[in-house]
Amino acid sequence: MPDFPDFAYSPLVTRLSHYGGIDKKELEFFDELPFSETRYQKGDRVLERGDNVDKVIVVTSGWAARSSYTKNGNRQIIHILLAGDIVTPDVFVLKHIDHEIEALSTLTVRHLNMSDLTGLFAKAPTLSTALWWASAQEDSLVREHVVQLGRRNSLQRVAHFILELHRRLVSVDQATEEAMILPITQNVISDALGLTFVTVSRNLKLLTQEGFVAKNNTVLQLLDAEGLSSFCDFDTVYFHLQQDKNAQEL
Amino acid sequence: MPDFPDFAYSPLVTRLSHYGGIDKKELEFFDELPFSETRYQKGDRVLERGDNVDKVIVVTSGWAARSSYTKNGNRQIIHILLAGDIVTPDVFVLKHIDHEIEALSTLTVRHLNMSDLTGLFAKAPTLSTALWWASAQEDSLVREHVVQLGRRNSLQRVAHFILELHRRLVSVDQATEEAMILPITQNVISDALGLTFVTVSRNLKLLTQEGFVAKNNTVLQLLDAEGLSSFCDFDTVYFHLQQDKNAQEL
DNA sequence: CGTCCTATTGATGGGGTTCAAGGCGTGTGG
DNA sequence: CCACACGCCTTGAACCCCATCAATAGGACG
Image 1 (tube, rainbow over the protein chains, first blue to last red):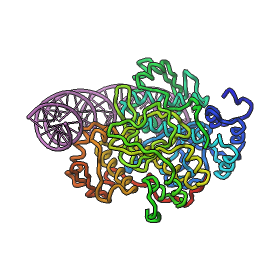
Image 2: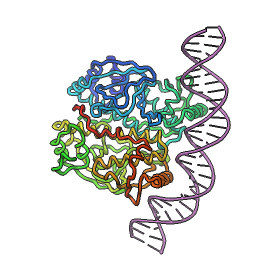
Image 3: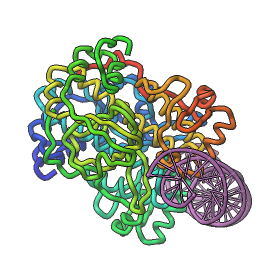
């Protein structure tokens, strides 16, 4: 965030600062909004299916998951939420959430009052567009997740999973180009990828043997991101990170 | 649409009329917006990856698909678009679309100018909320699609696919409770479900033999929707169809 | 009547699951 | 400080669902 070095900012502000046409003043307003903060432990539920939510919730640190459970208790992780992600993108129009939000690691989230936000939107038009953009980004990632599960084999899925998370972490200054911290178990990965943890284990071993990655404990090194990308058909277009010059305000 | 019998309406207006708190006058304004209409044949591309879109496009009749192609030419259908669906939900913030839109049958779409729409939003606040709701609905369906591909077997996928489309068609008066028209090939179904058309064929036969459905040509009858629903864990909560009384305007 | 697209059905093979056993690391309590 | 438990990872073996390959049939359309 080179242009905004002079005030404290949350990860979401870091993300929004990448949005073309954002007004620095509006970001400051946003960052100064009153909020309450909650801390969760690994495994805690942040929100449950059916909950009636009336706050905008944003991740400030740690990992969380949107997940859905089938009748027989199997979990499918729909999307992984990182620092700077919005937990409740549709809270203004859908009051009841239809899935679970659970902490995958120690997690901190901020709660913003909807009335505070709508009040701010009135005087911060580029901010509301930027928040819309952030939630459109998630939509795009979820669409790519469908492609993951529908058309890639287990090894490609694991590779793609790593690359996507790495890129997202880098974009909020939570990882270097070469390495990242994976605070989740292989069981979590398997529930995101529609696989079993046995397959994930075997595939991580394969990727290590082939020299694509190295792993000890929670630190994962990317030794050949290029090779991995071409192997699993990873393409960052769907992140929509580059600023869209034509974007206009509502 | 029992409350709005007295003016011509598009399928999207029918859908939006189900949204709690929508103002009838605003729907009329929306329906009277100037538009151009385009007709496509089965197989035509409506939009391609990378296209720079500057209109809001809405399906008025026929079926279309959001789809993504992998490097080796395999198609994954991410979402099926029916009458009343918005082709370009994020057009205000993402100018370049990252996937393909293709006609699955003869298809009619309407193009609305973004400036006409933003002009209308100024005097129709409940309309913009309702459109947001419509696009939040699609997000929810795509999330459920992830669960489909990640955690259901091939037979459950086919069953769930049928039930979901049926419910959506009913909600825009395009199907009866007992039967629907499926204008797509089994190959299309397989590309949506991450399967092969061979498996889809076998599974449709199974569902027929078990007495859940009957099929001749493009007409599909639902003989036991209840049984089918419990078999594949189908639950309409994720449609968010019932009006949310708490919804508020931006 | 031939062509092309779609659907059906059988046979075979493979990728991923399932079941199972053992290892490693960490924390806890005797 | 060691013993034990527990969670997570690893690795092997057997099985099964679905893909793949292939052949045929049916339908629409010129």
